[in-house]
Image (cartoon, rainbow, N blue to C red):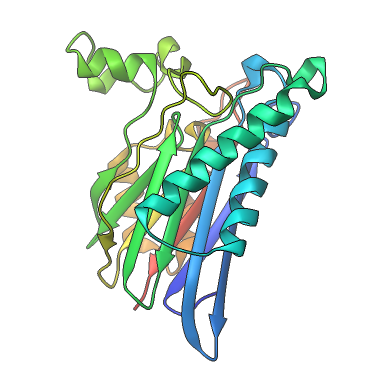
Length: 252
């Protein structure tokens, strides 16, 4: 792993028959100097069939392309998301199970030597950014309920657990109405910055203050997500969704 970053990761099936989440990281160092890093997470849309296939295709496509050209700017983030969408679409006709498969995606790129990061997403998997132990920013869900919140027809406090929260208005798997959000500027890193990249099965049971409290207690990123996992398991109900996360700390 590249100098300057600490990474933790987990992916659990919950009580579902299969895990439709996929996540991975790629990074390297050259002669002790930090090199580019890519973290990626996808959550296959189980309601469409082939969700586990879609998420694996998306993650593999991003990692392969990034390894071939490891640039860490916002334009590269958009290229990687577009490329993964085309890969998922190309995989759809292979069988009846994958004909209409979909997936969310979060891509996070970092160049520790330049102290910058860039990211983008589609769907309702999220990226959270914490600074000095407090939430600084997070991605906006591409969901029907989030659209209702934005239009003033629903309350943000009622998003978690709402039946319409899982209705996506954007995801990988279509060339016609594909949409992704990618901030246009590099994100300047500060020592101590922490990032949480996670599927909806991970973030839904965890309010942001709980994430912050666990961050302040944790010795490293893996300990942080392990503590949050324990909270998810304690709250688990029948049909518990898959839940996956990557945690990244910038340590300078």
